[in-house]
Amino acid sequence: MTKIHVCALSMVDAQVESSGARSLVSVIGPGMEVLRPSVIPAHQHLQILVSDIVAPLIGYVLPDEGHMRRMLDFFFTWDRQAPLLVHCFAGVSRSTASAFIAACALEPLKPEIEIAREIREKSPTATPNARLVALADEMLDREGRMIAAVHEIGRGRDCYEGVPFALDVPAWRR
Image (cartoon, helix red, strand yellow):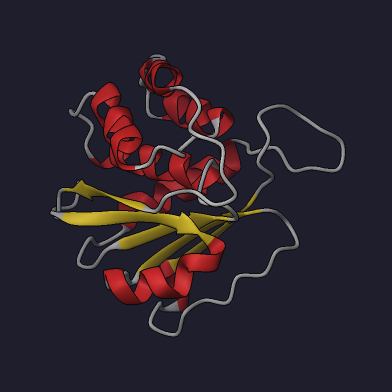
């Protein structure tokens, strides 16, 4: 097994160091700057520049199919030889959705609700972004099960930054 770690932007350097992550996904708002830790090769750092919204809003970037395709392609090509770290600004919504999506994509036979409940157990603050989850649900042909799983665990506890957590995923590639 290897791990997908989740945290806030302010914790990236510490989490990379403590986890041994060598792949990084930054799901942050347009205009935000992420300084890639030197141990993460440039080709192992994906930046998805989207706002933390679930419906169109003037002046914000709504996640779309193109963003999700890039994310899924990155997850499917991750070699799983070292952990992956996913972060957003607060480590609450976009990053938890992305970790949920990665786990669902990389473990297609594991029930979505089991993955969602594991996230809730490990992070009481996790509130996966419903728009990202819905896009992935459609693209992974999950027939609404990912959406239902996130709905079942509900909104996490209010916070400024989310509780970091990690999910185990098989070390073998699909």
